[in-house]
Image 1: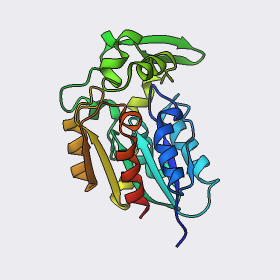
Image 2: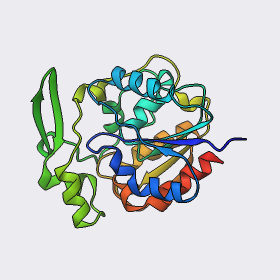
Image 3: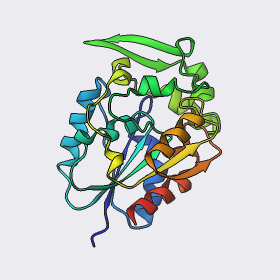
Image 4: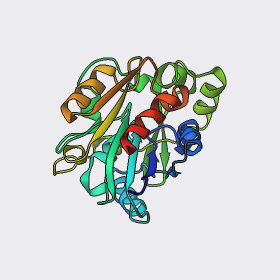
Length: 231
């Protein structure tokens, strides 16, 4: 059987570079890796974008999603028949009729609250950033000071309407094996929320004492989950 290609999909507030250390470890182990960039202007648009992107790839695929991207890959319309397994990395595991916004409020603990956000206009809508002085605590508390500064400066904003998007049919994780990396010190998506979603999905769970920036801080853990999904 052909070894699958790994597709690493970033979430809100960071771009594909959040995967850089995971990608290096996977490539060093002989895996083919590609990391697209989501527009994050509307939920349906991100679903259509990812499906179109995946349709350009051949052979078996493993798709790993961080944060908001978990909602996108949960939508069955976002995936192609080549996708054989999923990895949710501190990510939403959304089901039919749900929204990321509602899931993030299911249990207390998220610091993604208005006081910590900056909202700016862009042509066609508004986009959300984390306040730079709050970025470390909310997103990357255990990252190096250097990484915290880089991440806070080079945020990829999202339109808040993306978090209100839903889909009508059963999620992709109902009929594909899935893995979930749960960060126990996550101040963006509460760990309790992550555990609840992963248990519901029947995911193989790996817990790590980390922040929301776990792909950067614990790339070996994340790469290990991807390798397991590829196997």
